Image 1 (cartoon, rainbow, N blue to C red):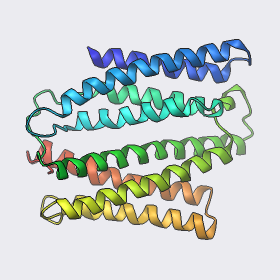
Image 2 (image 1 turned 60 degrees about the horizontal axis):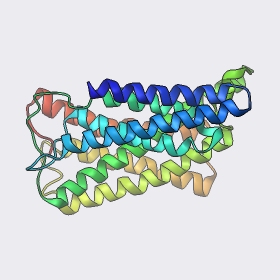
Image 3 (image 1 turned 120 degrees about the horizontal axis):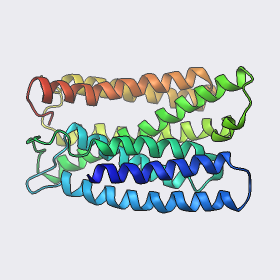
Image 4 (image 1 turned 90 degrees about the vertical axis):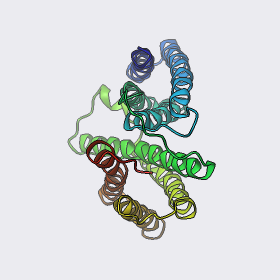
Length: 268
């Protein structure tokens, strides 16, 4: 039941932010933004309390695919709340809240999940750093999709009230590369901590995850280097980001789904 309540709060926050961008300027805009932030704060606090209790039982972490998706959803909601403080990003933040609500619905799935992660603080730190990196880069993927939609609308000359939902293209691009840089650092820390704390990252059941994570790290590194030294932007940069994110999703969710739901093993 709590999943529906959190979803409802996030939907209200997202809808209010979207309407604040579409509504004419005036007092109604600030009222809608205030309502959105109030609902967002309530949803984030409740979401966080519920999730912490679910993923940290005695004996280790319990990170089913549903709890993992919910953890990333909590990150999306938190980043959306911060982004909503900037008026030009409120349309984007509204979309993040909707996705965060959908992720929150997965909390606790599957209900009979009995696998627990390792109890050592080193392994728990590695897992949580990894999830933080995935969540951050997920936001970047959403920004990349937004920028593609925005650019196509501009090229097609589709100028309407919907354009108010988008930040200026330059702002979107700067946001994407800022997230890419922070996500790259977080993913690098996750990989380094993995090599430091995991006994054998190239064990048979982990080799695919390790190889794909390293490939994703390489792709994000190439993207950042290309931006820094060759001025990459536009389609080349956006699609390279999405390729890197796709590889990362396959490394984590694809590997976990096969191990836990088909082979009946724990990824850790």
